[in-house]
Image (cartoon, rainbow, N blue to C red; front, side):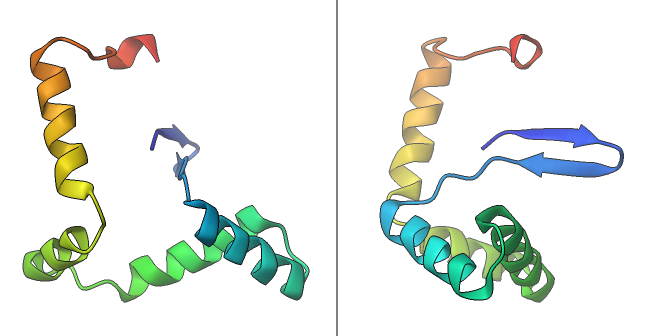
Length: 89
């Protein structure tokens, strides 16, 4: 997920698995809006409802399938120097 700051806004690139992408497409078609518009609205609502308590955030992160393994892989890759400097992105 990358982000860009532009005029006080942050742009996020989010990848969905095939099942959720298909569900988002069906929902967007049903309400006659673009998928990105609906995704932005759904994400904003989820963020507004999120509890900032660190214990709650940990529970959310723990519920993401494979998140721990991907984080550990990222750490290993960083230690091996398999990274891209931010200024080159």
